[in-house]
Length: 326
Image 1: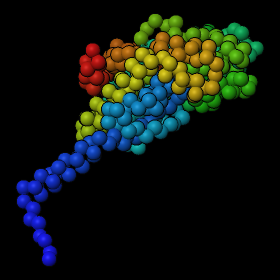
Image 2 (image 1 turned 45 degrees about the vertical axis):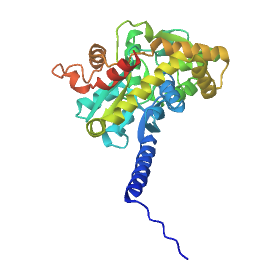
Image 3 (image 1 turned 30 degrees about the vertical axis):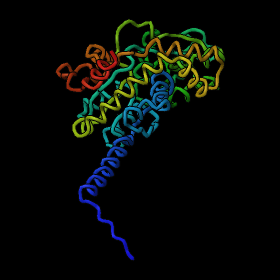
């Protein structure tokens, strides 16, 4: 005998509806993938990599694919081309791209003071000994190039006439070239202070002694993402803001990250952590005055006084994230 069980339509509806709601909930729980480009080593780069590894972005609903490039110039180009929707990099490179019409916005500024040291190789103890020697930058026209030319003038010399400026690469590459004697001077970020100390390199100029505020490092986002998926921008900015707080409020975790990354002693990790914190902004809202100072420091842009820099900035996402933390 075959027994047939009749199921009420309402029960079927409830079952199907419940399954659909479960699927929707699971889909919503999955972080959205987002390509993110960055350049440089040390400093703010350490903080954003720490934030990603610590899961701060995923907790906000975005899963970053971190893409490393060799300079801030390429960082800006990558966002402009649409290869990545967002990037962390030097504000000078972002401003140059924005001045050329790039469809993106500065959404955060995480460092607003120069934090680099200009260092001479072993055997060079004063600026006069650099005359006629080789000085390294990442790429011509990059932020390190602008800073280096500024420092050379501060030291009483003229770039290209009194020193030879050569392209070497990021801070890691410049440090290796200094230690190996291939170059005679270069900028170093705070994370490379142990390298300076261990290898008898000489600090010839400390840019952190400058008191003016300069937008140095920040976050830019493609306009298309801002317009079409603002919830992703909100998640990205909130995740980075959370990561900055995590870095500052959980020094043990931050130092563990630095120790793993640089394979150095506890004392050197303490030094690097303290130096990064000297410059890292807990409230990384873009400040127009500091952006203007950076703009005016760039020879190819400072003459363009008609530009409204506020059009290059979108601060509502970070302002909202900061309000939620207060």
